[in-house]
Length: 384
Ligand SMILES: Cc1cc2nc3c(=O)[nH]c(=O)nc-3n(C[C@H](O)[C@H](O)[C@H](O)COP(=O)(O)OP(=O)(O)OC[C@H]3O[C@@H](n4cnc5c(N)ncnc54)[C@H](O)[C@@H]3O)c2cc1C
Image (cartoon, rainbow, N blue to C red):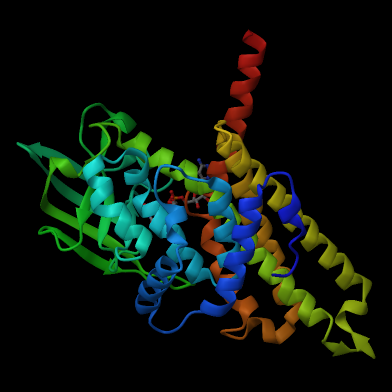
């Protein structure tokens, strides 16, 4: 672990410091940076390894420790983007069951997820409902003690390798966001198929799903009828700050790489780090990393205190993902031509960071959340 001084910040308790140090030592032994050619196999192996290491238990269950999740994602992202992805998706995919599942659902799924024996996925987005989630069209029609799903989901991480999917569909109790319910759909259920596998710039399992008269028992519904939107938002609320933590991990790795290169690359009778332009760039990168870390762990700490973090989580996600993109870009620049060679660590980071500015609420969506919250608080203060 490079610079661990931030672990002494008052946001953390001793157990968090121990967790971060132990995970870093474990990851150094068990996790390699970069993507191989078979990401499906790599992801499955990583889920198993993380389960055997005991790390996945932090991602499931009702006693969610946001600071622990953030430290784990930050640490894993610094070692390997795919390891962070595997950890995060076990949490996001099973999050609805952790928060709102019945005892039977929890019993059937959560233990396996925590041990790395079952892979989970979170299926909310659709071709015509991304940022505008409430526009979803996938339908869930009641038929006795079953529901019948029809429609499509897209951009579903772990699509194709997951053992079960938490699917959000329009059940029609009310218009808009109040008429959506969540259902667990096991892989292999008749009427459910992987319509398309999607390739992205930093490969990970991703797919478009299709439901054609897919019948599932009502006992697979998570939460009350019509409460699906709330279930989805509560799940995303837990994990939004952790996306920021992953971005922070990528940025820290880029900083390590930049320092390593700048202090050893010989040029003009010295090394790259001798130049003030380089020192200024390194200072900007460090400032961005520390500002992001402060925002990430403020939001995580505040959530662990049981406080509302709508604005704080949005600020953390926006600042850390946008900031990491800049830090990584600066690191690529310092590596010169080598920085754009396929498979170099900074080149991989450059591709890995990009989608974090889009998913779980694009940057513009976070700006709206922050702006609206400021106006709401201002109104409340004036009416008090
Ligand atoms: C790698 C990856 C993994 C993903 N994994 C999952 C998953 O596991 N499960 C899942 O359900 N979804 C997943 N998604 C989907 C993701 O959540 C959506 O891509 C995201 O919500 C944006 O939706 P969209 O792609 O339809 O873009 P659109 O909604 O079409 O938005 C396009 C752009 O418009 C801008 N924008 C949006 N709203 C506003 C606004 N109000 N004002 C101004 N500009 C705006 C933003 O820049 C945004 O990027 C994943 C996406 C990616 C890229």
